[in-house]
Image (cartoon, rainbow, N blue to C red; front, side, top):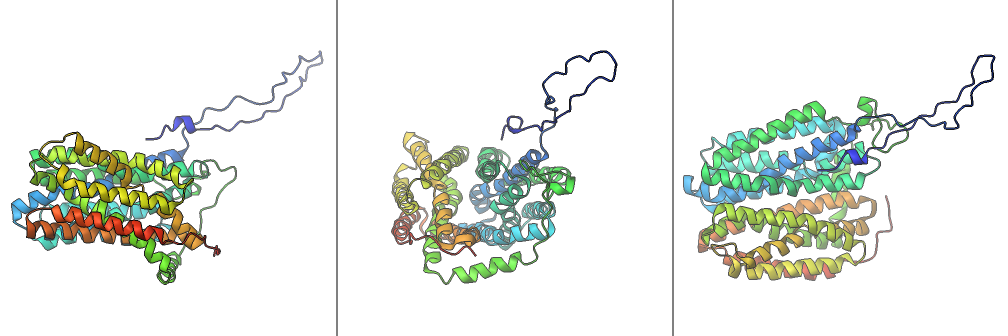
Length: 452
């Protein structure tokens, strides 16, 4: 995580010099008027950020689990892969749809209350999953409950925490917190894969539930809604910042912006490209790569390690993409990203085999660099097209990203049931990437002129 101590700046106090009250000539007063910096503890904002990051890590770990559940549930219950993938699909869609409203609920009821409620929903959903007996219960528990809980602790949660607690280093904190999602999958996925392989899928789910309970305790003890609640200032602030009033109309504004933006052709083009992004990452690779690799004879632990490698390089790719977005046309970057992703998916059926050779390792490295690289250009295009409403519009665009992911998750499972393999799925996904590259060229370059 962050090196908190290196970012701490102590305030300096000034003490006036004084003259002696004795009658003899006074000793010279030292010319230094500034006192030595007081030793101060780490600003509470960094502790808040740390706990928020751990919360995001715990919630994101549940996103890494569906790919590990497909084969065990298919074996134990004889459920079709399509029905299992349906739960993943509902999870992804609910995750995306609730995110635009999560920030409004945090403004209305407070960050800590919503975080605790979301973690409670996640724990309940995970616990019920271990005792389910029908596939519809998987859709309800994992899809709806865990999807709603995890979606409430996504990018909107990170942005809200950073906005309330930081004036300086805000961009750094937002980047670190949003990166915690991929980090959570990276940390948990190999452990979960080993647990599923050696102990079964239920102990793996219980492990995630216990992690969520542990984080909930930290949230209750440490997380606070605003620095003013503790008589503090946001990190970097030189004056007191009052706690903002509860926004009772935030949800209505979110919906109003949705209805306004869907009338724009630009919204559907941008959303269409981002839906393809979701379909070709979360929907197909994160959900079906592990079972597809198992079909080719690869051990589940090895396949999970490869997916974790994608997570590692997705962090690197996002940073590089942000740097490039500041310097080049974001539309051209999207063409490059989607075109490259399509070529990789076309080659994947040939590369998959029982061993993790150099070719498949090279695939996961390059795919990881392109995995989340689409986010910075898409955010910038939303801002250019919709001005001050661009952030909210991106929230809805991200919701369609999850719809695309959920649709492809179900399609992948259905294709595996009907054909006995994933070959057609990779090629269709590659074709979608080609469509997205063509759509990116058609996004209007002119910036929005309104800031209302």
